[in-house]
Image (tube, rainbow, N blue to C red):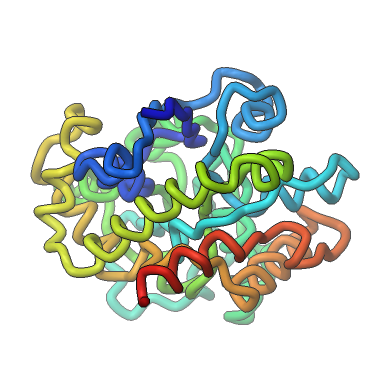
Length: 305
């Protein structure tokens, strides 16, 4: 078995495909002994790749765009994992006829740990004719503090992920207003990335990894949410079963998880435009420089033959 370390930026049900592949034995079937973790270094997954503490990292293309924008080189993404934004907008009362103009003059408690959810929110607001400057978007509180502030009565809207959505809705502490995955639309929100050297020198390793991921994607595309939740349960034992199942089912219904490993140009350009419009990056970067499609295409072709 070939040991391999895969880092994720946060331990989350959003990244269920990683744990489904582990739970179903798809990595082991390819001769891979996968260890997962979240990076301890301040630079996160980027530092883990550059310093060699992980062979593959899961995260947003925005991380590679940021590195490239600062002249720091190239970290290519080679497998799409999440094809939708995984966040949800909650309110303090039901809003069955919600309009985005309702956010004007209000306070939204957003996600502090990564910029992409916030950047997507800015794009949706502009598209819906709402000036983002008219919305108070707070991003300074870490997740636990943000939820505590919400429970204490601070904020008009809360943007958060799972399983917090299911917990707050069941408690009556919040009402689901809109899925940011639906509002943003399809885009490569998260993907597996590696270094150019590994793409060049360890192609067979990456092909084996991609085959396991593609097999997992095919299984998840037809599996009931409750079955997916059962497979990942050992890695999310702290989440009560009813919340784990509800979260997975909600993610599955909106097409959160990619059905094949190919990260397509259209989605990349949409995401890049979001980050350009929001000022997160200053320059446009070529799809061919930050996305490697050869691994995914080879695996898809082989599976079809």
